[in-house]
Length: 152
Image (cartoon, rainbow, N blue to C red):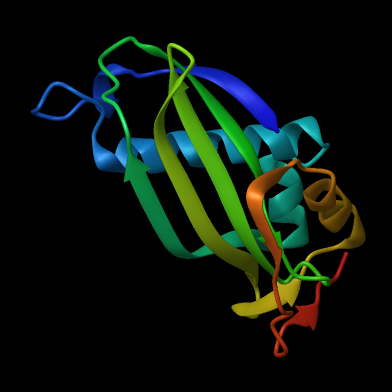
């Protein structure tokens, strides 16, 4: 699994003095985008391709609190992928002090930003996706039949 060390910052904390629910989603997305940067896909490349990941569903499970300035480890892996990459389930586990604090499972696809339609990712992005570690509950997903090939 890909992993990054992050910190619970001031803006992540809610009125209950712990990390708020949307902050977990933000940390998950940060780790995902860091992975793509490390694979040679900075935001400028997504802009050039006119392509972006699009979330269809997020599920967050909470196990322990995270407080202001706590260091967290956010992992990123696959819980599922379709053969053509048009559909994916992403898994982010968030650890505090080595113990699972939250799990984010996201169902997503790739959006052609010009045509506003789901597409299959370019080969290099699909290769980066396939090289991610798999969660213990990984499953193969069906292709989105209406997804078009992405232009590179």
